[in-house]
Amino acid sequence: MDDPAQSTLEFPCEFPLKVIGKHENDFESLALGIIRRHVPDLNPDTIRRRTSSGGKYLSVTVVFTAQSRAQVDALYIDLSREKRVLWIL
Image (cartoon, rainbow, N blue to C red; front, side):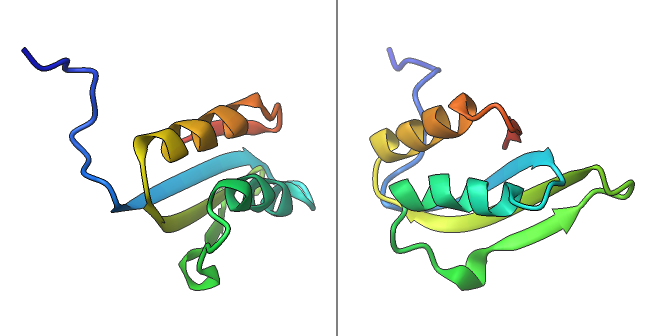
């Protein structure tokens, strides 16, 4: 029987990722720096940023071609270790 916790994604695949933190001057650079460690060929045209309506939070969204589950897992682990990253979607 298949493990329901296993992903149904087939790699490589287009993978959207949203990182949210407090809207501080360097949060975008911080988030993109971590992402680029795992996705060195990140296309700048896929980067979207959005400030919350109250201006307190900033979301940075990217879409990249994920090569493997290991790549995605490592990216999530590195982002979650950063205290300034509040949510990863």
